[in-house]
Length: 489
Ligand code: S5P
Image 1 (cartoon, rainbow, N blue to C red):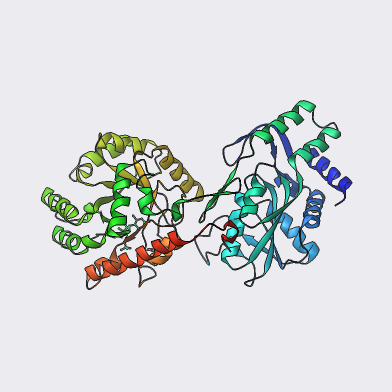
Image 2: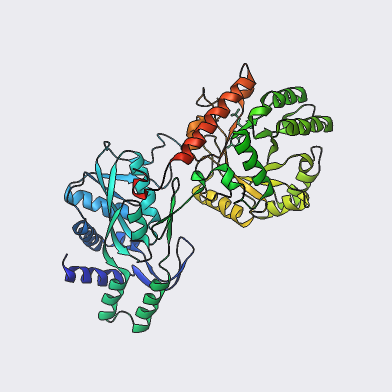
């Protein structure tokens, strides 16, 4: 690579303010004294072409079938490479579409094809890895990534640990030296960036489905921990109880008892009780709700050793939910161990629920994602819910989810929309199998309603779901991660 060519490109990037100095908050929340934003090159086609040329020249091998840019800045750069080198490209979406094909990757490919990753900047390497992970799941071979700027904060080591060879056009120290040499920055700025890099080189990759790598070292994530080991990792006594009973009863099945009479509810609870860890109710569906129903339900929960989970999906301000939870005709706080709540109102909802719980051992499950078609929960919303959960680990035991929204072993992920026979209903419900829920979507607990309640023999159906769900969990924890380079391949 021609050094003068690299220097000129750095100066051009400086001129168009692709590199800035000051105080910036990175995606991870880290404060940085500089910010490299290659997005601005889209307004400067010649510079963008130079960046693409330099990246192509940096590629570690000459044999690729495809290129794929990491969204967003990597995309136009990969498109230029694709055009110049006559090599097909792929696009990996940031999130799946809620309509149409729901494909995460656009473009044609066949299994075994070699794909080169293209990225503008790496900090921890998470964005590159997330994209690689998706491509590897489709059977593509992804071993190399070219990066324009390595911020030298551990990203390359993290990616190397997952079997990705990273080649960068330049590292931040070299870039700073070029700017200093040409009088663009003072020696103080140069020193402050050097100081920052030397003290901020511990980053980790938190992947959606697999393990976590901190400085290239594997950290065990939720999906690979046993329920038993999580009894002591959680901050919440009810989560501990649940993990304990899941591992002793060998079940991760929660039955959604959506029936309309107390008689049906109690009969169902007695039939499926031996096979479940939780019974989920919607007591507002019951035509004849009474304290007697609750007393009998509590007795059945004792008899069969399961917890009661009222799916009230609270969604209002703290003051209102406190009254709904601790009063009204259902007095949910008195009998339900767990309740669902939306994250939408913000922290106040948790504070409201806690005030009504008033010291009782109770917990809530935040609805982070829904199983229904057209659900509005965006990635930002999901992240907001997990942040809320992290802030309130003494009350939030986990999330209702459809994907691996957290790798934190303290949280329990509950996945509804599970059925063996149907793909959906006529009102927007969408189903996956117990195996897919546990292995692909990261469920700790599968929630099954009509698959069991409408079966000819609900007890026999519950046994089948229990066995399938638990077998998938055993398969998941058995997946060995000792050889990090095998991850995702
Ligand atoms: O996203 C969701 C969240 C929940 S809690 N999708 C859901 O279906 N649920 C609940 O799970 C729903 O209210 C119902 O009680 C159960 C699924 O029932 P099924 O009959 O479709 O299995």
